[in-house]
Image (cartoon, rainbow, N blue to C red):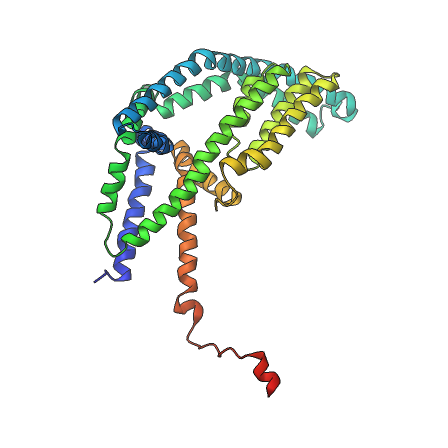
Length: 364
């Protein structure tokens, strides 16, 4: 006999509280394991495909790990130095860019020359902040990232965790299935498949979209001659997964830098704007429909709320788990609504009147 609903709610509530407590108290500690698990989840279909081609799980995992190591080394040697250099140069150039913007605004709007003007004081404050904090911002970003991630732990633990989780992924799934409550196992399996479907379509697909768009922006903007094309492409690609925000920030950054570098050369500015417009068109009409799909079931507003809420409560770790948790809660919410619509609470006690044939009424 199944447990009473009150007892079930109590145990599932305790499990949810334990999960929240782990995020709250062990966020920085479990970060490498979350990232390693995410990498294993992302690469599990590749390992399954290699197994179907005849490789053992060990051989498939080893081959994937070797390719990942080679790609990582290639990125570190070929891309990362240029990326860091452009980011540093961009922050060093920011004060000069702001001064030119201030001069342009003063020429077009003479009222800003009044030192008592609120707009003038605001511009002066922004300029002083950028000038004094520009280099410090880069160092603080790098330093905080290293402090949160723990460079040594991240570099050493994440690949090891990803390797072993990828190696034992199917075994772990089978073991979890063994310990499911027997009365609820079919429903939990169904919900798990639905959550996996959403995550596979969104997370794997969206990461692919970010990689494709980031590469497209970086290569195209560098060919167009934009000085910081690589860093703009990396930023635009990295934040593409945030609905609307990624497009706004990436486009504003690309066009703003083009205005600074090519002022007066409207053809070059138009090319940069056209590159970003083309990227957005391809993302919305070709790349995202192909790689993510149109029926993921993860609404952009719900995703934004999850990222904001989990990021505020749990920091960087919260942002990492926001999408999987949002996907799981979305699936559970849809399941709850389906159950509600079949419950007595929704249908009530009244018996609907029998349907009558319109021909009988006509005959009467």
